[in-house]
Length: 35
Image (cartoon, rainbow, N blue to C red):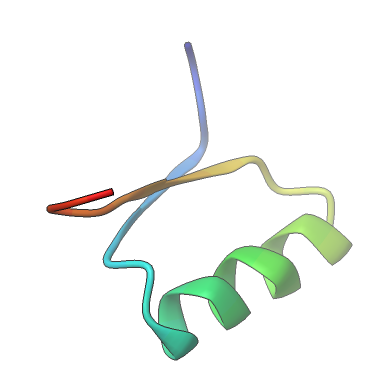
């Protein structure tokens, strides 16, 4: 898998960042310690 951005943590700010990046067409992946 190849992404442009890696986000550490799936808290409110991590999820918001992922959404904003998605709206701009930027691929990202969220990494969380536990799922």
